[in-house]
Image (cartoon, rainbow, N blue to C red; front, top):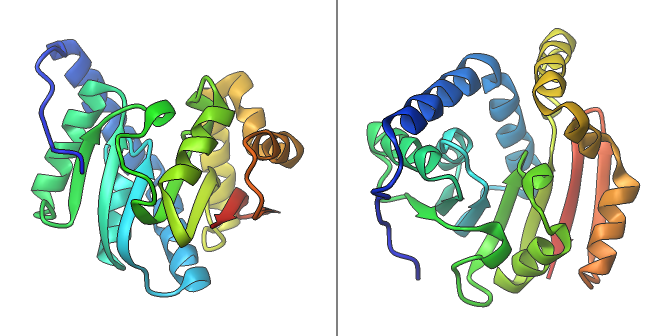
Length: 214
């Protein structure tokens, strides 16, 4: 089981940029985070057990998911300054007993086989250099009977105005990577290459997701 540790080699500028990123997420994308968590709980029931969030950013999503479930969440982030702001957010919300920040890489998840009941990765898929490898890692860490969700979107409960506003912000930020949020065929092909047998692609106005069961 991973142990929490604090990185020592980020610069003050890195930390300032991470805090600006955190502020942008909270100011612009909270409707999507609230909507997606509500949708997940509605679709999969009141979740409990162990959760791994792959690519947690500053843990804003993990905090919201924690509020609406009994999950113990391991929030994994690769970027050290972003990880540090995630740790600060978790402490500020007094959720250190329920959310554990983990500094690590999605390509080599620091968890044992069949560790998690539920795995979620929202909005980090486009960052993975070797997407097939990450899907293999997610499947390895997922328990038998567990569910993993990988993808992105704003959830079914945002208004049309909120959706249009956030999509514009997201697409300007991601540029060419934005196409990963509208290509179910590419997502399906990656999962096939990872050798994952039991999955389905969910693609509607709420977003694009791969649901994996083991």
